[in-house]
Image (cartoon, rainbow, N blue to C red; front, side):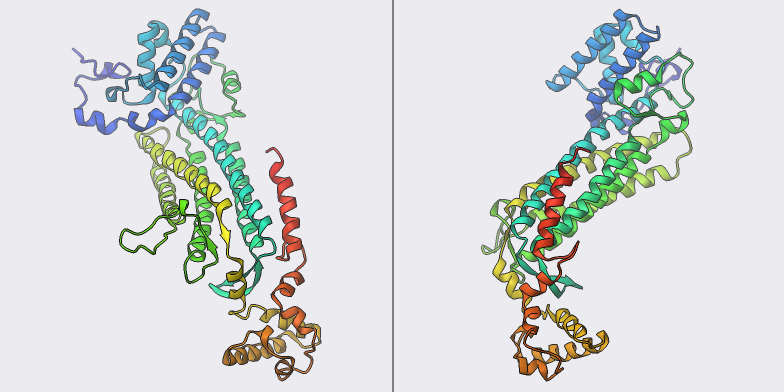
Length: 464
């Protein structure tokens, strides 16, 4: 005599599942987040089953009414989740059977939990990608506003973290706008491949019932149907691709975080972050710690880890579905939550950043940031660039020895290095002159920064 250990699959088993194994194998602790999508997929599936004659109209109506009742119970916090029922799918199906009897038992006709969960995850992730794209846009708008405000603010640009050339602070902010633009494009592209429907693949080989997958896909808003049932239930490429895009976004936010941390330090003192995005020290009363950027920088490693986790989960699996795939959800859910939170806090914080313009300006004078401008000046006077480079190197060495910036040297001092230098040299040695001279597409002059902002506002306003 068999012991029915589970109403979905217990008929073949003679012993009940070990109590710890029940907990160890259950996913309901985390996959219940998929409940709205499970209900959405089930309503579409029931509608299709009725249209092809597998369910009666009354059975379909009972099922849909019951599913909506379950969703209301979940939203109200009144739904009782059971570990014994393993996952979100069986919890919902069991409650549906309680509500509408045999009609509820018929809902699973023509599908498996394998294609059901694959569909739920795609529906969930599709919505999350849309929400994340909106958060990226909100951050981009904040960057555009800050860039416009600081288009003429002069700061040192760095290579090797050494002062290199003068930059517009607005131009620097626009670099992050560009990164986020690529990120948004990658998300849109990722969403296209994500929007394929696995439902109808059943366990792995399809089903013998006369289902209409095209109709189900239409009801669920999928662009296409997964054309191979084995691939449909076992594919997690779309999730890995999303995690790859998320990792790139976090990398960009982490680079931005690192600069904000440096710039807000006493050693740089380029910006002021508001108190509402910082914390203090329990022992050092003078401290104002940039916790938000530091946390974002730290959470980047967490997202990278989730990507590596999912790649590792998938790398050794034979076709088709395996229990390993249960482990795909927590890294995915965690990445979605982490990414949305980081984008949100940055979009809230960026408009509050205060540029310390005088400090930025004076810092440019400490690093001989107009040296390249002097070299370009000499080249235009007929000196080969390599010779000009040598002359400017000597003048910088002289300036260091006498503690003078190039723009502070007299004409006589400069002419000692090359007699081609004339009084007009001071036009290019000024920080303002250096910025204004770089007046071409993509460069740092205030005119070009403002033009880039204007073009970006047009682009970001366009519907995707």
